[in-house]
Length: 237
Image (cartoon, rainbow, N blue to C red; front, side, top):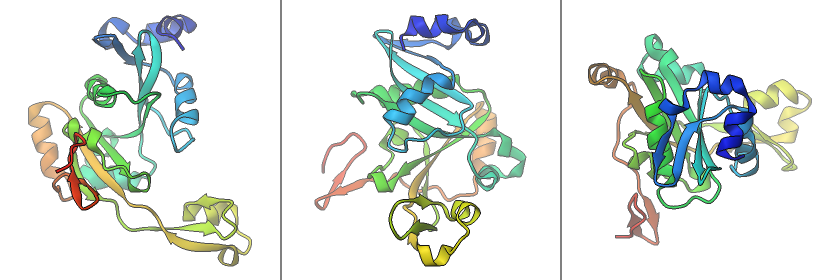
């Protein structure tokens, strides 16, 4: 979808979103808020997960007025995650950066999109995101945009069907495939994920929220390649 087409397809979007305020331009790129329907092509056809997450805010990256990427934010699936970051009192401030999709993944597109979109989110917000180790992700984009690193997610298991045709989290298997579960499935380790956190608030409020973080902050992880360390800019040392 082109930038002009997006602006013209629905008058309510123009009324809801002030493009003069929300647009952020850098050279030939424009970053602006987009709606749920406009995220579907990239999320379902380009992102490896191939499924739609909960989306409260989505921002499109337009190059020469064509949509080439997006980032989306929504409520985490688990209320325990929201309460477990800075406490129940601040749980409603929590958003998850749940999709980052780039059609061509050109240099600096990811960091520009994430960095600019964070400035467009409401404040105060507590943004959590994950880098999937099963996809060989470390989270360099979050390191480049100054997220706090909170270590790896907890060790968990999932039930996987023995024939390999389905994979579901255990709670979904129990609720939808109740017949002979133990005979037809095995427990496997769920891939762990790197956890990152960004707090969007005034200096005073950010300082107070940082003190409430319940996870231990850790140094940024790096990828090991042939016994050599890769830094967040991709250089090998």
